[in-house]
Amino acid sequence: MTRPPRRPEPVQVVKERRDAALRALVEGVPYIGFLGIRFDRRGDELTAILPFDEKLIGNPLLPALHGGVTAAFLEVAAIIELAWTLLWEEMERGRIDPAAPDMLRALRLPRTIDLTVDYLRPGLPRDAYARARVNRSGRRYASVHVEAWQDNRARLFAQGTGHFLMPDPG
Image (cartoon, rainbow, N blue to C red; front, side):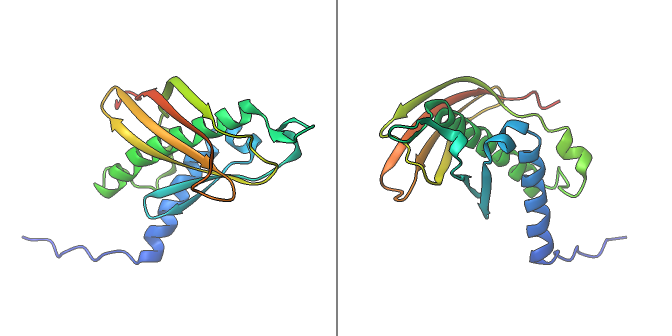
């Protein structure tokens, strides 16, 4: 006996599930909430958003974003992009049901091996944005490049390259 073909779910339902999966992924890291970082998802592409807050200023005379905040922003963008890429692939293959909260809680994030940051100019007291690109992702190791800008995407204020230890799939 053959099964009838599965009817595709409505686009809005799929979108809501993916947004819920991303939200669960981000909410699993309290430091992301402390910094106020949000993520905007368009398909499988993520943009990290760091809304301006006075607590993020390192040098009040300039004023400029603290270098540690900038590095943390780049690292968070890289880790979430890498984890989202893995999660996206598993959702597309049907191995993970984003509606099952237990599956997302069990998801472990990649661990940072190193992160090199190039501070290109001071981060101004305004919102910042970042996008990461996975250069290589294997079973044990991944390399990610990330760029951050404020008003003009072509005028980066920081960029970085991170190497990450991938979580054990078991």
